[in-house]
Length: 189
Ligand SMILES: Nc1ncnc2c1ncn2[C@@H]1O[C@H](COP(=O)(O)OP(=O)(O)O)[C@@H](O)[C@H]1O
Ligand SMILES: O=C(O)C1=C[C@@H](OP(=O)(O)O)[C@@H](O)[C@H](O)C1
Ligand SMILES: [Mg+2]
Image: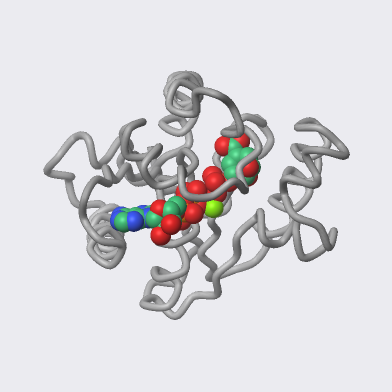
């Protein structure tokens, strides 16, 4: 399948890790997840990094790993939800591959993240409120870097991955996109 990098951005719980892994399998690309890379290199979990080094320490590690991973070819990279905060990451992601923004409503994000406690930013009294405010703050940044936007809802993972693939094919062929929500830029724009 097409020989380019696919970078997934979007909020926590949008499915970047899960859909990215499946997408890599069906496209024959190698899969990377920036959070997993950070964990395997440091030997500790994301919550432990936040605890010891704070969010700023985590962001520095995230920038370093993204700068490294975007140099690879023919990969699917699932980024962390806050990766787009750094202008440097946004630039590298835009330049080195095709960027897919996986969107989901805050309520959907909440449903998908409430079963685990591995996301330090959601360890608060009101995680749904936090998800809403993070999405409000970051949505313009996701849109800024996105070549394709996919709205996810109740569709199962495989259906979302196939929709991503369909929209990527349209995007790469330069075909006009039917649904404006699904697509923000034309190729080469
Ligand atoms: N389209 C989907 N349908 C059902 N469950 C999903 C979907 N996308 C993600 N999930 C589930 O939501 C949870 C969070 O997904 P994950 O891939 O970790 O998101 P992210 O990496 O964007 O934070 C996981 O349990 C995953 O299985
Ligand atoms: O949104 C964020 O700032 C974060 C998202 C997480 O990744 P996922 O988006 O894969 O959950 C992880 O990088 C960290 O907990 C911070
Ligand atoms: Mg993830």
